[in-house]
Image (spheres, rainbow, N blue to C red):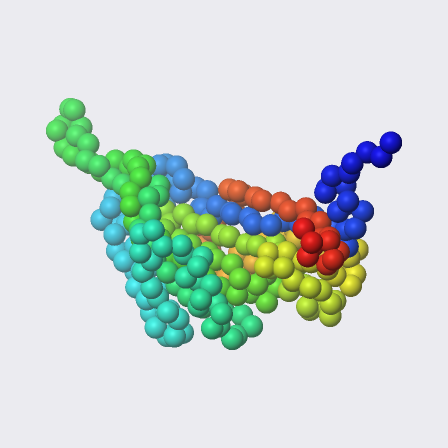
Length: 268
């Protein structure tokens, strides 16, 4: 008696390439000490030398950061656009990417109003003296987020975004398949690309080693490289004092792709 076979079993016998890889990775960017009220007070009082930590100091710092972004866009000839509510940012960025000819650089800066965690000061009153004083509290607010869409020689397209209000938390988004494509090209290894993956490769074993080699250090090196190039909310003096961004994974998607032979793929 012949047992009927399903499509998955047939395709498994005709797979031309199987590879495991990081697909998309979304990374939180934050200055650790500034995620606590006491750390923020230390920044403004011990580091910046103010008597109190309050919105009086935070406002000018935010305006200076926004001004530096606008100057950067103007000096580098980078489009700076405002995303409209409901627009797909990736679709808009893709159009600008298609017109970008440099091997590396920023091809678009976009801003969008989004809800994010911020720190504010509120007035409190001393019950004995009646005097008021500022007190730090965390809350959420809708503020402009600035998206820097870039191309890196090693990682291909990615973006970094920053909030425009203290403590300027951000995000980094990379695509592991784009990283792999750049590495194959640099090594002269022939491959056939999918929109988000690899269909075939001349050296599958080396392809898998490249995928496995996308380490936390390489992602962190990418981040440090572009933090040095892009407008930064914290001054060089702030960074020397230890107010530097750390990174942690917010969301990671992993891919295990099976590429069937062209005949079966066409018939599927």
